Length: 240
Image 1 (cartoon, rainbow, N blue to C red):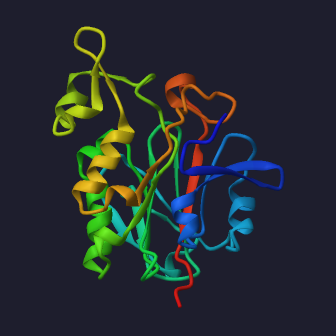
Image 2 (tube, rainbow, N blue to C red):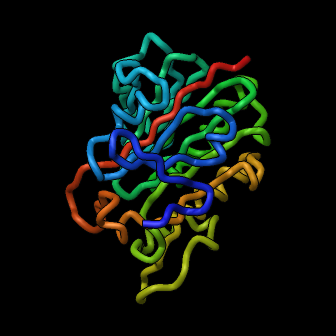
């Protein structure tokens, strides 16, 4: 697999992870894991973070974002698909096997968010809510840096009328398919929603690799049915 433009492969104890150059340049600890080994613990350690200081989210394919802190370490937060924090020493982690995993960071304040953004979550405006949560806390949307990780591409993601109706405000993300079907580019919806919320286009980097195509690198629910997941994590940097 060739990493997408704006991403690079980083090997942790012999296991590959993906890092977004946009976040790396800002000093944001993060990674997107692959199916090549259980890398999430080692990837967290290699980023200078404590694997025991993780907060996860239940992921119900909705639009809820929850603020968490050190008191939530070790928890799986119920009823939500996104987390955000401003506290150093807390690592946010989300999982997926075709849905976009999106990391949002404010390099100035250190606020970060991790979001599982499937089509239902995108229809519920979850990425706009993530940006709004950081903005309500004092961040400037135009200064945020966002990374949309590997997900199923439009080459492999056929959808029907209910999905079209739920996401029709982003018609550019659809291309014609079989009668009554469309090919959906979730990455395009994610980018458009982030930018509509005030993030600058140059503040968003998108992995264009398809999880369904790259069987050696990624789990894919579309390809395999019930399967394991990749992870994405992010932590607040120490802001001077």
